[in-house]
Image 1 (tube, rainbow, N blue to C red):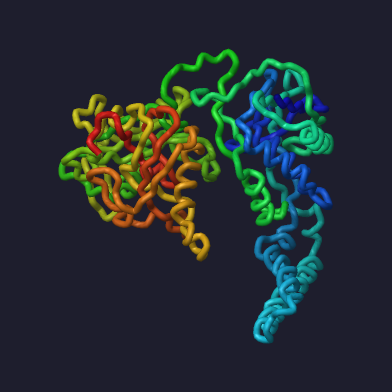
Image 2: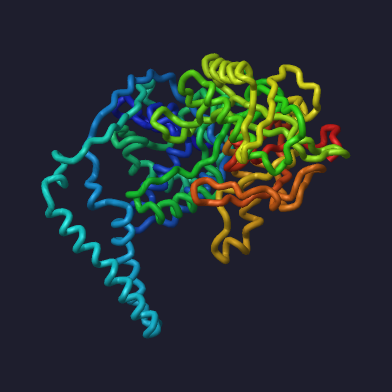
Length: 521
């Protein structure tokens, strides 16, 4: 057994929830604790190989149980703080200053050809122009002084726990005495967790504690956890942001059950698989490759008939920033996975995420109702108009929830999955299929599902009636066109759908269909 104790010396914990800038986090997520340990290890003048080995052992362990008391949330107050001088720390200037260092390093290479050396010297001269720009800018006015800079809103969500001690327990851990000594030494140097004001004392302990949260595939609490490769991912992220640029915390999602929670003995569901409302499309069926065009039109119709802003409905906060919380998914339901499947779109669905309150559910229903009252017409890009009807008891199999939600170990894509990248470098292209399989597995964990035992990706269709992924229009997010692939996968435990994976999941890409539950694939 391994037990790690964190004591909050000020009696409070300040940390922002990963999916809500004004929300608080409690208890501290295992991924945050692990990242703090990695940061402490990496800040040493010469990072210890022994400590790295122990960190690698930790990332390979199963998720820990957690013993944490209840906590009282402090009201969030907005503070206005002077921002860094944008003239001196703008993104373009930051890149140029880093380029100076890179070119100097290049010029130290004794194997450079004359042509390569001249090119590097030219790039260095251009990059050094930044120094003159910085000096000239800093001499202009007093706007560079903190007292005269603009102020930006900041919030510091915090909680006050009933007990300042949180304990993480790995019941099956078998670290040696020397490994425990190494880990304890690393923990002794860890002084904060979360915001810099959250001072902590960390150590290993032999105390027996009763967990309040235990890992459970069917639990309702989602925390960010650690998986194999976490240390390398954090090191790679640091090389890119260097501690000064915006960054995200590499993590995997782990489901937990509270000690008093009755966990149903049933299939696992994703965070997105809440209630859904089905719209039947009348008249000629829409071709399958029009999925995103049709779901975008559905989303537009719903938002146009919503009375007030709802983050769950819009997918954006009131200030226009994309929400990091699960929100409504707009799906297109094709006729696939049987002997006569054509792939044509039979209807649409608006699916709420799990955990929505009655107000968010009502907002969606009212918007759908007003849309139907106003004629229920759906105008798709290109001017094509479809007639839609909200149905409670669909008579078509493709529109029945059971078709998409029947518990199953295996799923296959009815609509291609949009990957978050497109291979550009030679090394990436060589390993593109392996990377795609890993990312599809990651995307399952991202929505609260267990990691699949195996994943198969393909450009060719894997269900009767679906089209090859190459037949679908490019799915763009900003300037990036996402790679589209079909996938088939197997989970270690039964999963209840609907399952939607990938970057375009909120617009119907990545819709999966259960396999092996009496269906003709």
